[in-house]
Image (cartoon, rainbow, N blue to C red; front, side, top):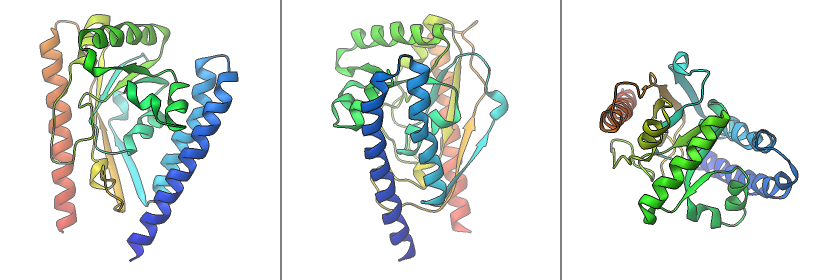
Length: 246
């Protein structure tokens, strides 16, 4: 019963604050002249949700592999299991532009706020045109000093599963010469993709070593990043299952 009450309070707070702050972002950021100013204003939501996840949802987070975060822009690739990583990656890593589905920008209030953060919005049905847009806008972002964050699975995948692994992020890194930073987590074990109930515990996020394009072709980069992210996320899930069974 306590878990039901706590999950209810957490969800109300998460949805309420997201709506209110999304409206503020949509209303205020058009009057801010630079992307860093808009990003800084929006970061209140990123960090606020990290705080609310911990204190409202009793979901803490530990980060492993911080020493692998470089000072230079990277193509950030992460598995996708829940809503948690949609804000946590932006709170944990340097300023970034995120690759999103174009239809998300049409969502009232939230989509308007998202559009203010200059995401790389692609229409996946357009194939090569979408890839060209990703590479062109991603190159511009990286050359400007921003990271590019991508969920290569394209949609949320339940813990214990891997799903497909799209080539977009790998193609961007290969074409531009910027490294890939692979990331894996087990947020879905605590925050299910379609579940109302949240499970108290500690989300683990692991940062892998950068994958540099030098000496590798796109297939090799794809295989390395895919294998590392899939194997690490599966390991985290199995370790959490074993812990729960104790």
